[in-house]
Picture 1 (cartoon, rainbow, N blue to C red):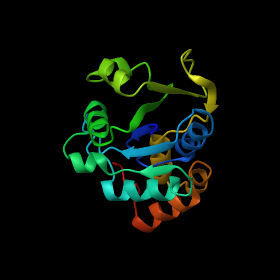
Picture 2: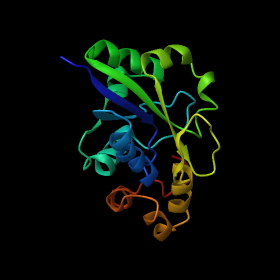
Picture 3: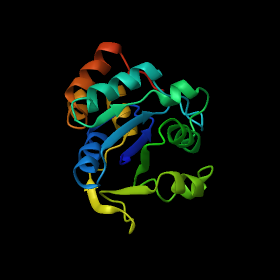
Length: 190
């Protein structure tokens, strides 16, 4: 039996935006992977304030769930405590010995990645797929500058400022509707 190649795409997804969705579609299309695992952070290791995990998980389900081959994982909630990439990858490798893991990260993150706890082991467990982002010059990135320069921070700020029309251009519309219905991000904070 051949091993399935599974891309792991972790993040706060606070909230997920259209660039995140494009990453999933692109990776499944051209990176030789069989499945794409979206892994929302349970508790941020640097204590960044986040919307509740269940809301972020549901927003990910809404944003990505329509793409065949994508699965939204609760692995970091199941592990509990602070989310650490190495711990998550070790757990996935142990639970799924039939998976060949790859870690998807953005070109904007690669400069900080060597400072992650256990980065060399991370690279051994799940060789990196580095994807380019507009405005970020990273020579190791596959498809430099393909993904728009959108951040969850700018989305939250636009929501706090009441600029929903701006937000609708940056996010899947059903996620925007979920945020509005739940009253997320309307006050300063997560």
